[in-house]
Length: 235
Image (cartoon, rainbow, N blue to C red):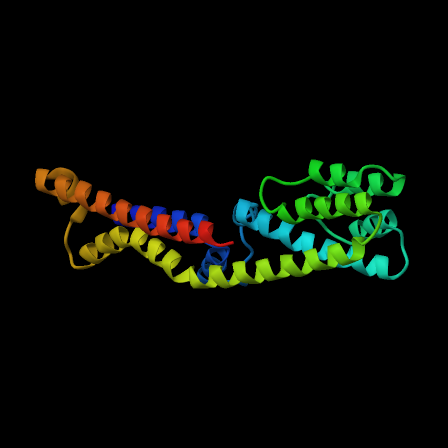
């Protein structure tokens, strides 16, 4: 029972800290046709910073595309922005409403955009605010500026997705390292041994347990550190 408990705890941590596919794997194991408990969807669908940032980056690209389309249709900059915002579904439904209201009233759109920039994933909105200020200062050229901005945001997002795909292997290695101790305990129990009695009841076992956990933790930390540094070095 102790081994099963340890293994279940490790697998729960892996599902919680891993990608969204962990929930899909777990659902496949327990049976897709059976309804999940009430609390499980909320647990697995809990918003994560990375997902929120990706949603805001995607919204910035769509917003630029919508503004360019509305300007090409003959709308004023304020009308173009308010209509483009109305056609979007932001991660926070009420986040861009003040921006649309300021655009309709002819106020400072750049300042309104900067006020709603999220902590992560809002780089596109910051750059859009800069484009708006340049257009106001020069008296035109908003469509060309926003179109170029949208293109650069799409290129950056494509590069980010390619990097994520390349880093999927190291991330999987870190998760495997985290699960290895539980797998070792399970294998020992399957061979008829009593690993927990040795690890928790003998001085040599305690030493092995501490050493193994430290080495495993260092391996997980080092792998995650390499992945994080590679992600941070990305433009």
